Image (cartoon, rainbow, N blue to C red; front, side):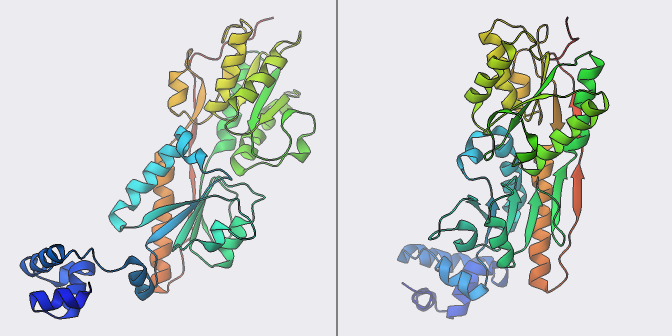
Length: 349
C-alpha cells in the first residue's frame, strides 16, 4: 500500500495525498477528509516514519540524558515532575522524548547511537562520557542541574543560596553537631572521612558548598554520610549508627527530601523524636516533604518551571539550528527558597 494507491482511489496526485498527512494546511478540509477516509478504507497507516525522517533530515525526537539507571525517571517524584513539565511544553511542537542512560558499553552507547534532533542533559554523572558523545554529534543541547558549559543554554537552581539559608536556620536554632546526608552514584559511600575524593554532580556540589559556607564561618566541621540516590535503606543504616553515638548529631542537612526519609526511619528505629531529639532538613520540596510527619523543613525549587525553561531553551536552539542562525545560550537561574516546617527545632543539651 503506497501513497500512489490512495491517489488513484481519490483521483488526485501523490503529492496531494502526502500533504494530507504532513501538510494539512495545504488542503481544503473536505479534500483532506476524502483522502484520509480512503486511506482508512484501504488499511493505509500513513507514510513510513523512518522515510519521513530521512526526507526531512530530522527525527522528531529529543533525548534526555539521565543517570546510569533510567529507573530514576520513574521512581523519583521530583524527576517525574520535571519530565512531565517538559512533555507538556513540547506537546504543541510534536516532538517526542527519548530517555537515555548515561551508561553504555563499547557496542551500545545511547548518547552516540540513538537518533535525536537535540538533547537535554539532566543531573548527569560528571564522569560519564555520554556528554562528550553528544557534543561530538554537534547536537543542540541544554544543560539542566549541570555545571554551566560555554556555548550552551543552561538551566540551574540557586542551590548554594538555598543551602546557605538552611544551614543558617540550624545555627540560629543552636545546633553545633550537624551531619550531612549526601547522595551520589559513584565514589565513596558510607561514612566519608575525606571529602576531597568525592565524585559529585553539580547540584550536590552546590548544596554542600552552601552548607560549608555557613558552617565553616561558624568554626564547625560536619560529619558526612553518603549513599546512592535511591538507597534510603543505606542512609537509614548510616544515620542509625551516627545517632547511636554519645555525641550524636543534633541535626541533619540532607541532599534531598528522599534522603531525609532515611533519617526519619533511623530516628524512629532508635526511639528518637523529630525535632525534639534531632532536627532534619531536606531539599526540593517535592510531595515527600509534606507527606512526612512531622512535615519536613526543606528548600523549595520550582521543578515544573525548570522543566518548562529547559524545554523552551531547547526548542529555541533547534529552531535556530534549522534557520542557520546563532543558537541562543541563556543562563537561567531559578530561585531556591527555604520553607520552615515542623522537622526543625532548638538544639537540646
